[in-house]
Image (cartoon, rainbow, N blue to C red):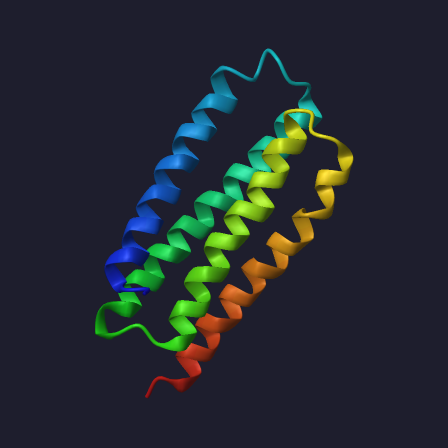
Length: 125
């Protein structure tokens, strides 16, 4: 069951992972990866961090109760982080190009999350 507490925990874990992976990329990978791979890594981490913040906002909205729209946004943002950012990180580290097939699904999940938040705002009075 999704609660405001579980959304907050997801936001905090996504934020912590974003910072850790960003630091890993900036320090450990900068001598290992070429510029294009590092740019891909940065894109993955940027999107993960922005959506960690989106989860934090979702958690704040859920303090009054988790609606279907907020639950949808939560699931979509988490799925987006895993699919979009995860596939980009894998690609940056040399995964087969076929892994890139996953990336757009993560992008769609992000869009669904934002649309769910828009719906939440529209329904709110």
